[in-house]
Length: 123
Image (cartoon, rainbow, N blue to C red; front, side, top):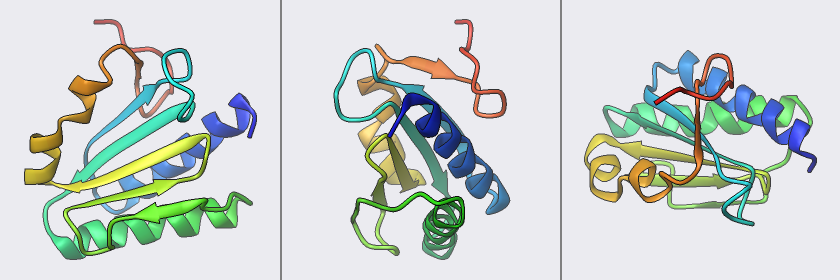
């Protein structure tokens, strides 16, 4: 997957999460600090039904755009589901798990992007 394709997929994931009323959507560009992916997209829901709907929406939106899921870790109703598209990894949490794992802190060396514009956030 090219960096441009990854960027497009990250935007698609953000839109799908927004459509399901995800909270605290974050996009972190990690390609310069890790070979795992180009982008992490992180979001949380308020209950298991919402997080399940968020995961389904991301998968369906990505597939409609021609992207395929490489693998999924966690269960749709779990407190953390990871959707790996190779160039983009989407993390869907419940509120408690998101606070506990705090991926944004762990990956703070990455470049934080505005989810709406995909441009760097000035900190």
